[in-house]
Length: 117
Image (tube, rainbow, N blue to C red; front, side, top):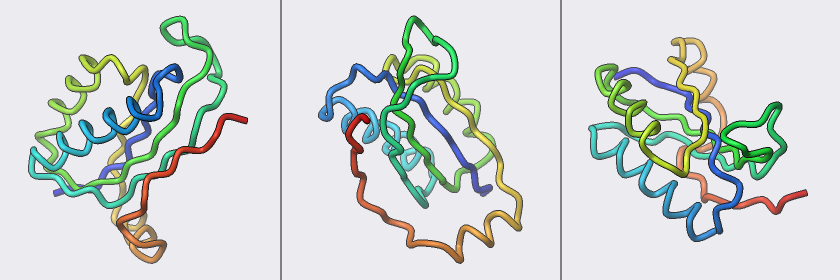
C-alpha cells in the first residue's frame, strides 16, 4: 500500500454536523476499501484563490492515509459524486516524506473545527 496526502475543499456553507457527516463518509470510504487513515487535520474555512462552483470560501481538510493504488480511481470518482467536496488533490508521498511524517505527531488526532476568521 502507498501513502497518500489528500487535500479536500468542502463547501463552506455546510453546518458543523454536515462537516462531521462528510468527513465520516470519507473516512468510511477509505477504510472500507482496505485503507488506513494516518492523519486528519481540519484547517478551517478560508477564502478560495478563485471561485469554484460559485463558491468564494471553502473548508480545507488534510488527510494522510495508506491505501492500495488501485483504489485511487474509485476515491476520485467518490469525490466527484460527493456534493460536499468542491475540490480535491491526491498526492503519492515519497518514502522520505513518509519517514518524516512518522517522526512527527501521533496518528489519531481529534477533529476540530476552527472558527471562521
